[in-house]
Amino acid sequence: MTTPSLPNYATLLLEGYEHQRESALLRTEMESGPPKQAKIRSRVMITRTCLIKLKSIADFESFESWFANDIQEGALWFNYLDPISKTIKTARFVGGGFKASPRSSAQSSWLVQAKIESWGS
Image (cartoon, rainbow, N blue to C red; front, side, top):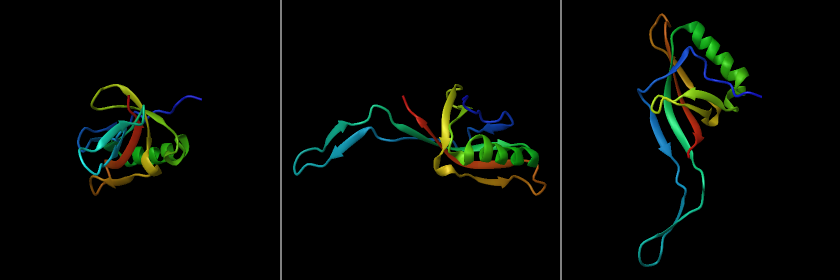
């Protein structure tokens, strides 16, 4: 089975982009002296807060269909073009949800706010 890709009509914006790397360490406070830290994970998840721009109501409706069917309500992994590294990465939606709003009263463009996660190196 091939990994679905974020549709080409959906653009992941640099605006609002945040990158949060989870810790690979276990930190233990000591009765005296500095806390101890030990690496306990070989890989960590990176959560990215992002905005996805859609140019029309038709694109928004297509995006909702892609989300519901192609990636099974956000449960499946998908490929996307990372706006920072300009490389293709694989991610999934955190918690299987997103928030969308029209950018104008004519609904001529939409912004989808989402958190996606992927494995770090």
